[in-house]
Length: 167
Image (cartoon, rainbow, N blue to C red; front, side):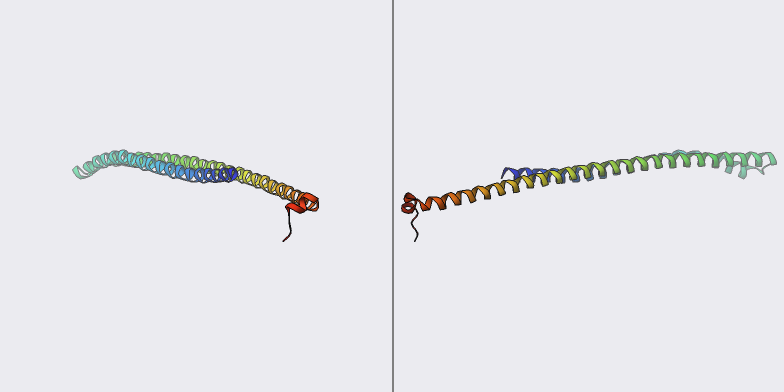
């Protein structure tokens, strides 16, 4: 009976470990997703404000006067620098995103390896305990057989015939 209790505890430990790891991964994925959303919204806010300010300046220049060749060149340079800035920020965001994806992938791989290792060790322990249990049962059968032989011999004695009367 003690072995059944240990077997149940080992099984429960494996199940709890598995679902705990799944829950941990879900929480971590959720936290990373939230952080990415916050980062993205901050970058959008910063970039949007800067771009809107620059566009407002450009709009005023265009609407307030007929642009000269110099102002058109200046305007092109400003638009070019804004595009470059947007491209750089976009690349930075993509790099951060890729790094986080790689880290999450590594974490998932490590967690799955940990769970698989625990399950394998638990299976080995259960198999070992079953083997020990079958060995004990086999030993009990042998002992029972020896007792049966002794009882049969005892039945053949004078005292045994008096005690073990056949019906």
